[in-house]
Image 1 (cartoon, one colour):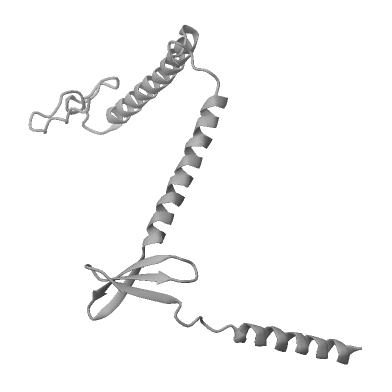
Image 2 (cartoon, one colour):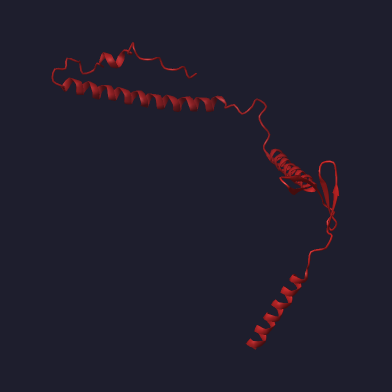
Length: 167
């Protein structure tokens, strides 16, 4: 039984490989015609035409149909993408007439959140001022009041370059 399976597989492999090797290229498949700019090559099996020119002593052929096919393929892909986008746009909910601006309640909530953040930030700044004031009052020879900031931290340096306007 195993011998039969092995022999069958071997016979099948020989048959298939012999069939593939028996296919020879077609003689006179291409017909060349001289033109003003070079040559035109016609494939007699598929009907495709190639434009050939001589470059550096070699004949270089470019399929004319390939360019057309590539153009048509790209056009088809873009048309499919446009159709898909149009379907998505059609499925989207309609927009409000005034645009997508928030209403007064949303604006109030946003302003409340910003106010809360700013109050927290300024609270941290005050805490830092108190901490630095306490540290300076403990230094030997310091005549600073605990709640005051040094003048160098309050007044800008007159020799410093101005900050760029980023508005």
